Image: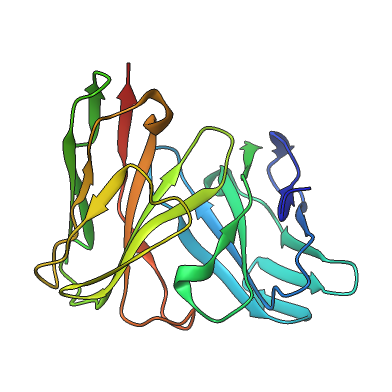
Length: 112
Length: 114
């Protein structure tokens, strides 16, 4: 079993839809959870960063962590064509940048 | 600020050849990282550096070497290239070690070894 599993995708939705992106993990030591967005032919950029369980909201984006189920989600409200990208989850047992385990990413396409 | 820059953008190598991937950041960041991203896989850390003259192995260091002689530059050396090293290589930097300091990624180098 991989440490971090991410829905395989790709995912295609119409503009304005609510999008749910999910990752599951097996390592109960993970305490820090991140979502990155990666546009085609670009490097990843950090979207959201949460510690432990709970929700965090930033504009149209909400990150949710359920440590009891080892499940994290990223919700995108009112999705826009500019949200079309690959979304990677990442996790860490410590607070160190050098200890990240990434999911393989899911490609989202938002149709105008 | 240019941020993190990487050269070359693309490269094709023959098996057994060597090359150096260049990475430069102009944000005065102490920490720099090299990742590889294989198709359909997550990023994996190859090496990282906590400052000039100090480097450490990541998850997948075999087949690679690094050096950090200045704060700005963190080159990645491939010796005796193998097909398994075909990947997209990303360099990143951060001001500090903790996740409170965001990692900024370069645009990547696409390497094919045939």
